[in-house]
Amino acid sequence: MKNIKTLFAMGLIVLVSATSCKKSFLDLAPIAQQNGNNFYKTAEDMKNALTAAYGGLQYGGLYYSSMHIIGDLRSDNTEITNVNAGADQDAVDKFQNLATNSISSNTWAGHYQAIQSTNIVIEKIKSVTMDESLKARYTGEAKFLRALMYFNLVRIFGDVPLVTAVITNPEEGYKYKREAVNLVYDQIINDLKDAEQSLIYEYTGADIGRATKGAAMTLLGKVYLTQKRWDLASQKLKEVIDQVSLNKYQLLPTYAGVFGIANENNRESIFEVQFKKGSGGEGSPFTNQFAPIGSGTAVVSIGNPLGQNIPTADMNNAYEANDARKTVSMRNSYVLGANTVMHNYIVKYSGVPAASLDSDNNWIVLRYADVLLMYAEALNEIGYVAEGPAFGYLNQIRGRAGLGIKTSNNPVVALRVPDQEAFRLAIEQERRVELAFEGHRWFDLVRTGRAITLLGSLGMQTHHNVFPIPQSQIDINPGMIIQNPLYTN
Image 1 (cartoon, rainbow, N blue to C red):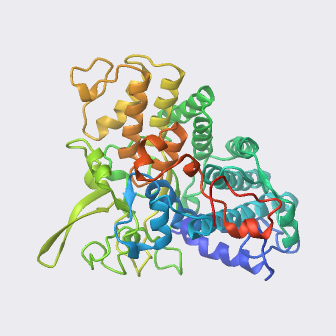
Image 2 (cartoon, one colour):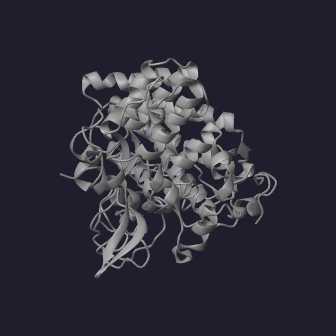
């Protein structure tokens, strides 16, 4: 049976058919949108428009490439070991990226294109005669997606233009300036609160993969955590945890059971970007992207190995002995011909592509293990309690990995967590290995204020807490779009 991943292509075609070929401004849309008043008439029209909004998640500036480049390559988790993997990615890895770097421009453009698609749904659906509960759900899905887009943007760039209306004329773009981070977060929170009220917990059949109530709750908890609003974060994340008793989410018995094409959209996964190979550009690139250059067919059987996200030695050493997560996430060697080649590489997204850059592997954005670790972090920030509930949630994650539990007075020094600061470091470590190569590490380190401490030796400075605004945007509207401090073109 088809699910939402098979509908992305159709949705993108529908969206493009409702556009005109005008020059876009601020990259708020791939092509400036017409009003579409004669197009968005029925519930089916809105379903197709919403599917196009989901399709935005597959853009190169989002989860196809940018989010793992920023989340992992920018951190101490992965690196570029061969410059042939790409000069712009190498610059991001070394904290040398300028305002003209394509990672910034692709990320900015992709997110604003996706935001335009969500704004179309939110605005046009108001006048469509259709089932009111379905209208509310579609609106909620679009608001969740818009919130996710802005959450990414505000963490990557800081102040960003806040566009919540459909751009119908390129000239309209000139009125948008960068808005303060707190105002962007206000919009994110409002969208997620609205989404939570109108979404449901589960879908079946063709709707599997759509945003759920639990996804809105989880993302809202992550937003509060990022803002250091510990009480609100703990309350919202606990609401997600409480759904376990209602069989909504669970920590799967094995770490291996979370990943792989056969395990997609499982009970631990709360929201993931859907990809499908052999569907005219709907496949995922990760199997090829993460294979070492020069590995031939030893790591990926079809297409070129691109070497774009190689685990560092530090990442390799971050795993404790006998951690069951390591072999699911990465390997240290491959066999090419009769030779064993020592080279780290990611296996969490291994698959058999239909063609180069065309695999079935989804990208998990939110999952239940993340909820448990975020909740433990929030509880600790509210107040450290020896052997308190936060320890229980931390140790749920460790127990599944086959590791010893951590306690406040453990006789084993490596398992001893005697105070609040030690618990912070324990959470940092557990998030690193549990969520390895899922695009969280750089965001975590910036959020906790630990980025300079851990990444300074790699070249990170304070201004690298955000990326440069694309120079092209500043050139278009220099009076409104101002560069982040200390960046040049």
